[in-house]
Image: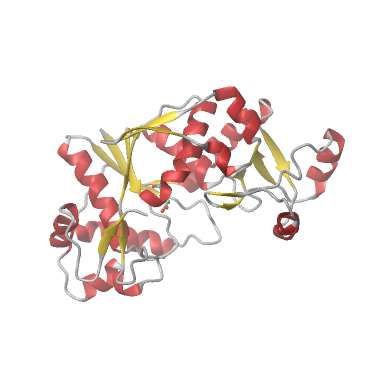
Length: 287
Ligand code: GLU
């Protein structure tokens, strides 16, 4: 068994991250397996080195030990570019020149496309541009790369994954529309980078928050398109605050740094979380 915890270094870790990390760590250790840390630092504008150090210090404080040096997505840009080349060679991605304003304007039109799990779905403006226009604009205009979802799904057929202890789930990638796989300002989207990395790391069990169940629709599709193995998944309940809403990085009181400063003992907190016991005022909820 190989599991991982993959924080994005864009803020302080909080109780929700601790819960996820403890579950993934303990599952690997109970099975005599491997537990890896990956730093999801592909978003250069939001990732910060001090958050990397603080996250690792928080995990160590919890008593979590990991195998080998943490991996970094920023070291893997070549692999992301190669995967995009593969999809490009199969005509499964296209350059999209739309600005946010362009997309908002087409969505405001009557009978615009319905919403997907992650918000409005792309209306497809750049999907069928003539090759000459595409090439001309690619030379001068910033663009992202989108998956041609209908075409991609037609090459794979129906896809499923196994949700540990709950049986088989059907992936519904088409509900996401033509998702972005490489951004104007980042060489890969979360979906592409995470799917490729989990495969390269040999992750057998993905243990992460239930807020990412919908993302698994897309990850399962990318696995099929790129010939990658499908791990088992366990999407766990989310830690919520007194307002019943899931914690966000801005909830300072729930940050591991503030709990540590308040005298909480890291390994005791980790054992409590593993047993589903949360500090007063917090609860676990399925979204
Ligand atoms: N860096 C991602 C996050 O913090 C990881 C999600 C995942 O586990 O796939 O949401």
